[in-house]
Length: 253
Image (cartoon, rainbow, N blue to C red; front, side, top):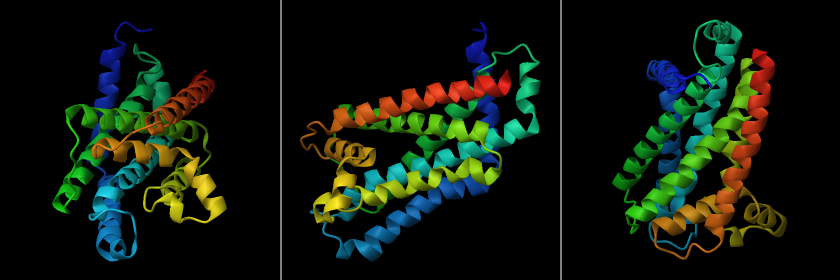
């Protein structure tokens, strides 16, 4: 590994972050759209949804955060695809920098930008009445789970970013990820769902992640949800990382 790997990666991170701050459509999609969804569900649909809580935003917030992350990582695939098509990676590789620094720059940019989006959405939720009884350790646990989710989904995004044949192909993978929270406990308890839908909802990763975050935020028994959530996140992260690095090595060979 290049002895200047971390400094090289920092330069690439700064480059990608500048691209984000100059792209208003990225900021709007990643932050504003999930906030609009939260407003819609709380103030228009919330009164008709029986979630077992007096303040629906408390129940809803974890799912909205996951939707925002799923939306945000699609831009990682788009930016990576654009760089690959422009030949910028070949130019980077001709310079005395670590070969994987450019790729890690995109990954860390996804982590930072999605973390900012998460913080903004939580601040808006606080204005809407969101309140949590969680202590510092619980909040740190929530932050850790969300960071793992971001990294796992980002490495999934890297694969189409490197291998897609078109811009649409690079970002289309995110649509199922954005839709997945709707078939989970993110918006309504799974007990209210028909049998087959409930079976799927209770055994897909979003439900365990949402339930673990919700339990941590409101001092409820976490049970096995947190371990199942961590297993899903780490499993997806490892598998996606392996396939992403294989694709990267093929592209840059």
